[in-house]
Length: 371
Image (tube, rainbow, N blue to C red; front, side, top):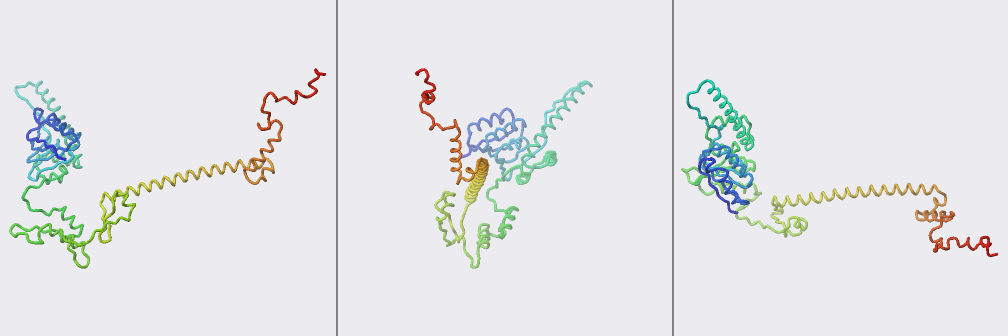
């Protein structure tokens, strides 16, 4: 995806390079990566703060500092996703300045008014300085004392120092430069047990295995080789595709995993996929165990309730107690209840309600009128 390039070469003020200028181009590049190239001595702090917020809202802006940049120009960059600076650039942070315009002949009362005005401006300047310092603190992680001291120094710092302070993310190297062995490279090589590269001097041309790339390859050879040396730049090692690990292949959504010298080659993304799959399975196992425990508890509670009911039934009579099983106990109870007058079941009653008193109606004692 191509970047939209915006240039800001000049002072930041409310009339040209301001929040409206930047917003216009950011709106046109909505959803697209943007590179803002800046070469500015600074300017209006309020405009710079607003521009920083606009870049933060866009979410995908890279600021590229070119040449000398100072004051408000550095502040606006803190809303960017990434800040880069050319190695020949310079960076300046300082306290803010406010316009003071005093002229004329003043009496005592007027001088007192000017003093009050200057005191108010001093408080405003201190508040702005603290706001600026906080932005530098948020970016670098430095202390307030360190940032205020730096702002008081009002000095230019090179790109490498700006990166050390944490103000920028990347130093853009110049062209036609010989490779340099930095402290980061030294630490990495030492941690891996690799020999440090030696850069040939300008007086002595580089030869064969003395250039940086060759030394890195030779160092890796020394770490990986066992017994006879193997030229990894022309290795005959066969990489095979292992398809029998079906479950792993399903997780990785691949046909098979690569094997080299009896070792499986996996990327960080592959390991993450496997780890996530294991976590999902473990969570499912935990849930199943919990559900089983819950069901088992419910089953135990039901069995205890049934046992209590059966004990109560057994206490009714020996015939119930001596029944072979619970079904037989129920039948014994039914037989007992059936013998109680007026408790006959529906099957024992007359289907026709009109015949409920038929036996009484046909009793001779009730037919005396027919005698």
